[in-house]
Image 1 (cartoon, rainbow, N blue to C red):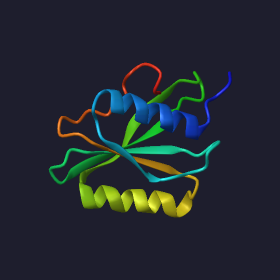
Image 2: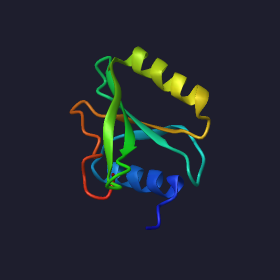
Image 3: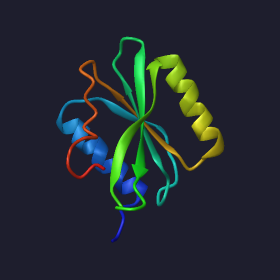
Length: 109
């Protein structure tokens, strides 16, 4: 099965967030073709959650799971560590007081 490039997925995700009036920003531009993507959700109260995509090798299913959560400074430090050993990593920051990230919607896994 053909996979979308990271660049294409990121732009589609940002467009979907814009349609819901959810602010989001590319904080780190990774490899356009095959870079992994982290999504940081900031609830604008000093807390944040970082999500990363996991693959089930047996079924081929993809899902978004929590990489880390807690005070925003700690989440930022964890993302910085991830980027230190994966320079191709994309980091998208979503800002929503309601905690919406849309990663659970069809087509975003």
